[in-house]
Length: 297
Image (cartoon, rainbow, N blue to C red; front, side, top):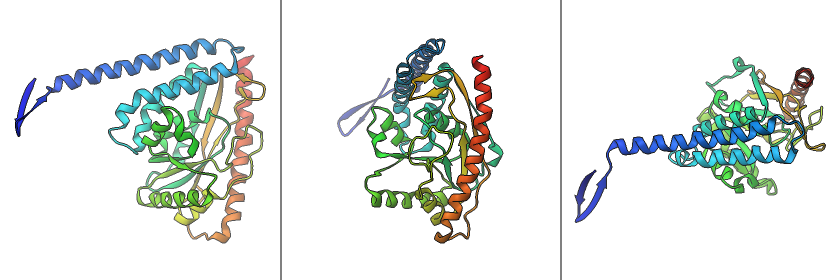
């Protein structure tokens, strides 16, 4: 190692090979931890009767571990959407190990040259896997989440590092102000703002009425709305405590323009978006049901 003296103080400079070896060692540790989590998940996926709580715990804790391993690398560029690429890859592998596969359709509908408000139906914590599939392809993404997620061990800090916008739903004024600030980024940096317009989890066969918050942002920034529909999780049932291997379909639909629209047009735009997403949700869910039924025969 080399030494450098400055102002009577001695500094030690490590050769580049030291950092290269340290990086390789950390990457090996990352792969080993992700591999271990996937092996445990794979073992659990062989049994359809494995407890729902245990499989869900493996999914949530496994993702927390993946984020923890990635934090030292993400902290080098805080609040950067690219920080989520590593955790997203790990999440996809964990889902596959649990027997859950997903496919994305409609990539040709993505327009990265401008920002948009991306609206998705919300079913369960497994939607984290949907985000993991969308993140690498959708563009400069930012997801909006309730503030409570920020306090989850490891995952909350990781979410902050990749730019998640946390809102306090109990204080409506603060939430609106935060979203209004983010709406500027849609146009300035061509951001994709990901939201769940239903406002809560819904695993039924019909979508819940949409909240107006996301549409306020779209109209204020005059950016298009990008509907993304995820088929019903037929393999997952929280009430009956069922978590089987299964397949889901993610479809990115064509944008719905809002340029030139005013606040008075909001109800019409909400109705149009809801109708488009409901029709696709019904169609995809029937297709996914047939695929999952065939898988378990």
